Length: 481
Image (spheres, one colour):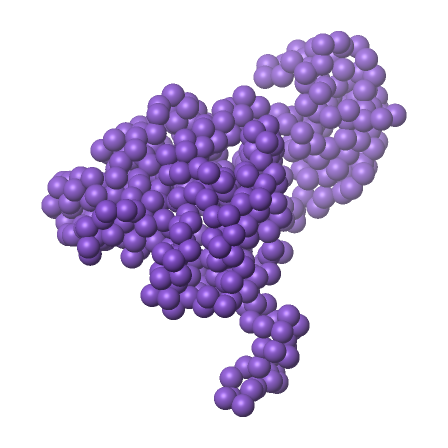
């Protein structure tokens, strides 16, 4: 008999039908009531066992975490909290679970404990909900761009280019680490490596994406990226997923419009399709916040916060205006900021970004026209800027609780200006000849942005640590599983 998903059974419109359900035991009460979950929904279906006619040996094997198959009649439930239940006529244990050793017992576990058991944590309600929301958001990303005629491009994971110019990259090599070949200068001879040159794991698909946008018009990438930044914060991962659209003929204003529309679309899609999971996560967040001092609690519930992003236009503010606001702010004057804002040109930290969003404007904020010397080489230099205060057509989107969630810019399409910037920063023009070619052959205004997918999932689920919204987090000192 073909089994039916728990989600479909709970949404059924007919009863008194014989059904087969398979899943894992969440709880087993009074030798009679199994709470069965198969991952298709956060909700369990109650399966009522005829314990008087079930062998004692079988009843002992119905433990938390065990995989079971039940056949029985779907009936309206007499108990509170569920619409339907299954009156079990046949029960089979598919996989035993030692109750004394199974870590995911039906009780509250710390998030740190769950990270140490990442291979099993998805069996809890919270992580089942997070991963279903993540899946739906991923689908919404593709749906948004596909419906708008964007071309999905798979940019390389192994690259010789450093898009950010940060240098914090994971090296890729097949050379024997205990006997590295050296050249005449005594340096590692990468000509003898697999690719014949020094290569890394990518930090971004943007540069390659630009080459495709200049032929296909509008493209997007959605793939894994890697940063070898030794950062142990709740906002950083060494391996994460990036969404990077790139659009020919778009300027900075078009770029801001696209980013705002895109973010609002995917959040609405999650609200429309993950109702049960988001309600559960909202309740989880409320419980968690009860232990915090009143001043540290969120002013809005999770669903209110998500709807707030949908119902409010993002406030567009120049970097220069933001610096003035921050310099004159109470936390800056009273030296409450860890990094005080004293002058134009300062690189904004998360505390500054969150102040602008959560305290000053009280809505999502798009900052634009940043100082050129704190942004990447490929960002378009603004015309007619003051000497010593040159700015670029960059934009960052700031969200409550997160800080920066999107970073993007209009790209520098002028060959001579780009070459001058690369020379000033010591970026090898020979290495990036192919990137410069896009400025030599049919160059045009174009723009794009990058959205760290995990930061989006973090915001939508209400979680506070980025390690809890990716299946197996990769962080300094940790590559478990």
